[in-house]
Image (cartoon, rainbow, N blue to C red; front, side, top):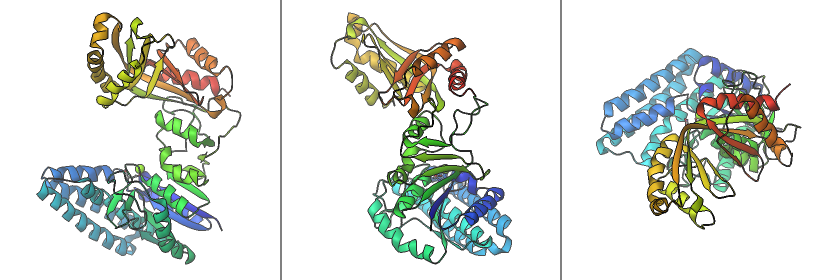
Length: 463
Ligand code: ASP
Ligand code: MG
């Protein structure tokens, strides 16, 4: 008997049309099924706003936000189930009352601790799970909703807690396996977890994929299906490249590279528990369930392609520290990165020529503005002596990355990338390739970003 974990994201549970599709998908899945759900799209954001309002003493604003959410969810139940939704409505009412009293306490204290925040924001998943369970029951699939509290066990790093797999396994075996044996499909809250003592925690924003992967690993599932609202991972952003197509298979390493540079379908780190347990992960579309989507596997996928996908990230600044007196001076780079760390600026790409005459960093554009004076202070003596000539910022720029396992050990890839850019008349400002050879990244001025992505995509996806 196969065992499938199906995770449905925020847009998949937010409308009657989507939810009817969810019911069909689950109903059509053979064997043991474990469903993991997100909050409906936008709900978690709204709950964060409510918590902030409460912390500012605005209790009534916070209450209004939660009662509006409750109303919207009750309408969803009424649309889907009519009078049959009574039990789900009862659960929503209880949870709403509890969340509102939490917010009132926060407003009185004028403080929302990370622990209180987790208790508040989990309301979203706690009300979506009973709705999905009620719908499944209404459409012929026996189901029961479960909160992941006391089921998915984590440490107490509120807001981004770390799952404890062994503890979780024990609990899951106690509480989930008996349901499966009885032919009942558990519908579990994503994102939500608790410490071993039962104090509510969350796995971080977007964390319900992570929840699903932990449950897949804990239950030794055969496959993890992540249902979202796009056809898997694409060879490029379809808003930039009209001929972009979805990729049938990508390796975990490729998925990680792609998500880093802006392909936000999933955050690969979140599916790592499944990958480590050798459970394949498929990204599918609730709104086009027959589309094969993308399968992510632990092992590299060599399908004859060289560059599998071309992705980009804009809104960045290119910072260059330049000067003839930098070469052969140990500790120079360390001082550059001490400065980025002290300014809390995230560095996305680094490149240094072997002449050591310049170090380039790519950072978010606002970080670049902060870094320049900080670096000028750090190197004030060198600037006076002209060992460092200047610190410059080019902004806005974009990083474009060509990604694919097939690049490793294949000569001539870089020349094809840069040849294509040359023919398109795109000026390349900096280049980086890690020794993993999975990714060639380069920097262009923001206004040439789309042209650069199209040129590289066209070079490797000509059909
Ligand atoms: N609802 C949570 C969030 O919006 C978790 C998730 O959707 O994965 O961050
Ligand atoms: Mg989500």
